[in-house]
Image (cartoon, rainbow, N blue to C red):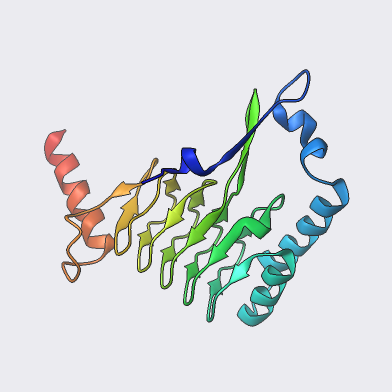
Length: 186
């Protein structure tokens, strides 16, 4: 099975300085400006159907009944590399990135979010990540690896919580259990 690092495309920095200094070699200024304006409208709109229409105009593949939270941000450089399944929830101020500008290269990769997956408030999804159906990403998590179906992940970097058994509680119960274990270890 491939991990996200095997799925991202790498491009070396084309000259002096870091790769962000050369972003216009990767993407048209006007396309990024258009995407940024569209992203701004998506972030502040309260109408979920309107958000989905704007996401589609940016090139995002959007399933049925997607709920895109207030201030959530799709990638402004490569939004067309995002796929959201049916009934996905993207929480307040979450960010889905399809690119990483680094010192010596930039990376671009598709982000696929399966049906009924939930991404918590403030979470960041990195390029190349696949989030399985019915998976849950806890608030403020950094998702740097794939999330298997029906799995809850939390933390920086996000890691699976609990034993994975469905019906054994929710992410809050798993976090409370982890906090209790950490308190005992102190």
